[in-house]
Length: 45
Image (cartoon, rainbow, N blue to C red):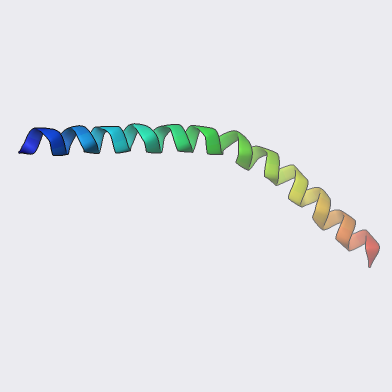
Protein backbone atom coordinates (compact mmCIF):
# COMPACT_ATOMS: atom_id res chain seq x y z
CA UNK A 1 0.00 0.00 0.00
CA UNK A 2 2.83 2.42 0.82
CA UNK A 3 4.68 1.99 -2.47
CA UNK A 4 2.11 3.33 -4.97
CA UNK A 5 1.42 6.34 -2.73
CA UNK A 6 5.12 7.21 -2.54
CA UNK A 7 5.42 6.83 -6.33
CA UNK A 8 2.50 9.23 -6.82
CA UNK A 9 4.17 11.63 -4.39
CA UNK A 10 7.40 11.38 -6.39
CA UNK A 11 5.57 12.14 -9.65
CA UNK A 12 3.85 15.15 -8.07
CA UNK A 13 7.22 16.44 -6.79
CA UNK A 14 8.73 16.07 -10.27
CA UNK A 15 5.78 17.90 -11.81
CA UNK A 16 6.10 20.74 -9.29
CA UNK A 17 9.83 20.96 -10.06
CA UNK A 18 9.14 21.23 -13.79
CA UNK A 19 6.42 23.85 -13.23
CA UNK A 20 8.69 25.97 -11.04
CA UNK A 21 11.51 25.70 -13.62
CA UNK A 22 9.11 26.82 -16.37
CA UNK A 23 7.76 29.58 -14.13
CA UNK A 24 11.23 31.02 -13.44
CA UNK A 25 11.88 32.53 -16.91
CA UNK A 26 8.23 33.64 -17.16
CA UNK A 27 8.63 35.58 -13.89
CA UNK A 28 11.84 37.16 -15.20
CA UNK A 29 10.03 38.15 -18.42
CA UNK A 30 7.05 39.62 -16.55
CA UNK A 31 9.23 41.75 -14.27
CA UNK A 32 10.70 44.17 -16.86
CA UNK A 33 7.36 44.30 -18.71
CA UNK A 34 5.50 45.36 -15.55
CA UNK A 35 8.25 47.88 -14.74
CA UNK A 36 8.00 49.38 -18.25
CA UNK A 37 4.21 49.43 -17.91
CA UNK A 38 4.48 51.23 -14.58
CA UNK A 39 6.86 53.86 -16.01
CA UNK A 40 4.59 54.29 -19.06
CA UNK A 41 1.57 54.73 -16.78
CA UNK A 42 3.52 57.25 -14.71
CA UNK A 43 4.57 59.21 -17.84
CA UNK A 44 0.96 59.28 -19.10
CA UNK A 45 -0.08 61.17 -15.95
